[in-house]
Figure 1: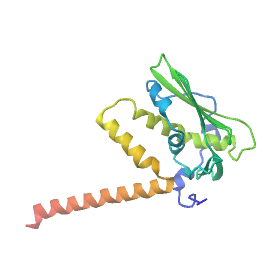
Figure 2: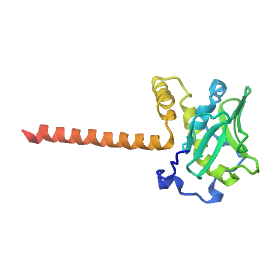
Figure 3: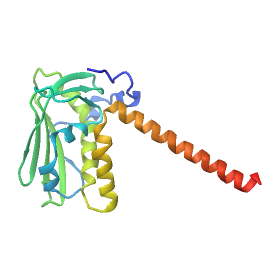
Length: 201
């Protein structure tokens, strides 16, 4: 598998103290209303790609080959998705990890959590917690795009589904760098244009 860990930003690999990491079986409220249609239609590949540090290859038949460039581990996995009216679970049996969502406050809120079985998988409980400090917020922000159906939300859903979530972590960083560079170029052209208009004549 192609190694992407050599190019990942050091800031993303800076490990927080263990006591500051998310804890398993502790629910994180999102302040977003429960949307059963979202969880029912959520695809396994989309859920996996919402992890900003997973480099995912095509399904090999025994699961998707994954390189977690944050904790520097490699494994094959494919989630088993289960949805009922007010709960959602995605179980990754190969690594003993489960992500859960549930309705709270009579559907006015949604909570997320994770659990980790203590097994001999390549992902340790600490690795899982380090991954979750980025993965759960990523799920929450993607979920926020389905809060309403405005033009803005539809645009960002299209952008995420068709562009960002089709890239691996390295490609996203390159894309982000190019976008910033393009913005700087546009600002420079604008400044030069304004300067020429006022002072060039």
